[in-house]
Length: 160
Image (tube, rainbow, N blue to C red):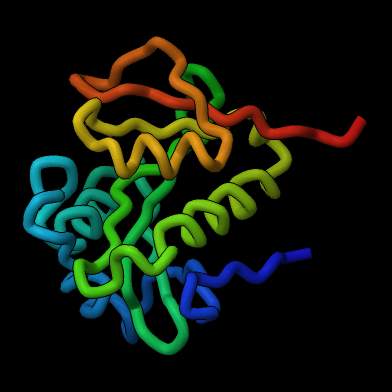
C-alpha cells in the first residue's frame, strides 16, 4: 500500500513519471545558488542524463499541484544496489520539507521492488544539509566514495 507523504505545509508530495505534460517544469527546476556546487544548475541536466545515459531514471517531484523538484534512481548490476541521485528541490520550495518527503517516497518506491535489498546515494562532504537529511532517514556512510562524494546506504528490511 502506498503511503502519502506531505511537506511542512501539509501538501501531498509525490513522485511522478516524466511525461509530455511535465518534462518542461521538471527541466526548469533550479536549486538555490549556494547548492550549485553540489547539484546541477537545472533539472534539465538530469533529464538528459536519464534520456541519454541508459542508467538513470528521472522522476518529477510534485508538491500539491506544482512540480517542485527532480530525483532519479538507478540499479547497479555490480553490487545489486539501487541508487538515488540527482535530487533537486527548487530554490523557492526549500526549507518546506519537500526533500524529506521526496526521499521517503523514493525509499518506499524502491523498497517495493522485490530485488531491492539496499538503497545507496552519495553527497558531497560539504553538503551538511544533505548529510543531515539522509541520516535522519536511516542512511549511514559506507566508507566508500563515489568520486569525491560520500556514499551512504540504507538496508531494506524484508519480511521473513
